[in-house]
Amino acid sequence: MAEPRTVLVTGASSGIGLATSRLLLDQGYQVIGLSRRGRVAELEDESFTALTLDLDDLESLDSKIRELLESRKLDCFVHAAGQGHFGSIEQFSIAQIEASIRINLTSAMVICRSLVPAFRRQREGRLIFIGSESALRAGKKGTLYSAAKYGLRGFCQSLREDCGSDGIQVSLVNPGMVRSPFFDDLSFAPGPESANAIEVTDVAEIVWQIMQSSHDIVIDEVNLTPRVKSINHGRKSRS
Image (cartoon, rainbow, N blue to C red):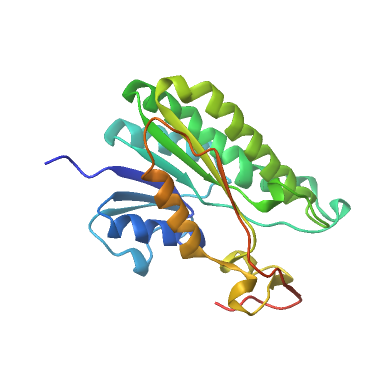
């Protein structure tokens, strides 16, 4: 019997990353979850390995990925980690600007710097990135977040061109507002109705569908939008 395939998921302790990890475990995958929180009760499973690491620490991230690849064969990478920073550009310090780009963009590049050569040697591998509708249409107060997500989209497009002939498939999922802990520290959130937000399980299902697609095609991008857009300013999203 073939060994279960192994997926590395960032942001695995909450939101989209947690939902994706749960779904993959249910489907029989080995999941390596990377997050600041490490192991969480919702992922107590013998097929789950928790790695505790802050994506803002790029040097440690690079070392951890290289160390991981020495001991494990990875088949897929799902980059679901991210943070929202919203406001007028003059409100942010240089340190905040740098941190936002590191977490939302540079960390993905650092991981791929080691992962892509490993996938090339295998002649196969999937790279799935969770982007945002902010990479399609920038909005007010979104200078930092949109810049990072537009950058991630461009990175994916170029990486796809670089890696296709090596058997590597690169996909990007751009969700609109997702009902998740992403909004816990923000001054706005999706409206309260079910049609006002995408659920984390919806995004996880799209990731799963991408993973089940033929090795001979690439699902370049998938864009998801709530049926009825509604934003509550100064209020938290229902969990």
